Length: 82
Image 1 (spheres, rainbow, N blue to C red):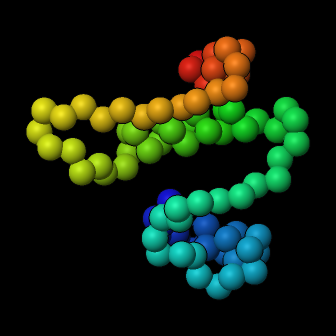
Image 2 (image 1 turned 180 degrees about the horizontal axis):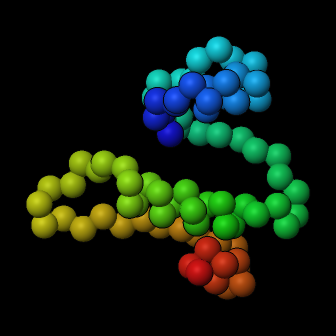
């Protein structure tokens, strides 16, 4: 999300990515290889809650922000909604 890391987080980041420094801005796109039952729906729901609740948005006073989560079927939609 482009947030600055503390020293412990930076060490873990370097170990996992092989990079010395984290990117200083939020990325626009990411690709993950995740199998079935890998927690994708729950992870996206958590990310959506983070973006809605903790990130700044350029809304004007009185405007209401909307976050759209799309699921392929009602079962997966229930997982994301919960």
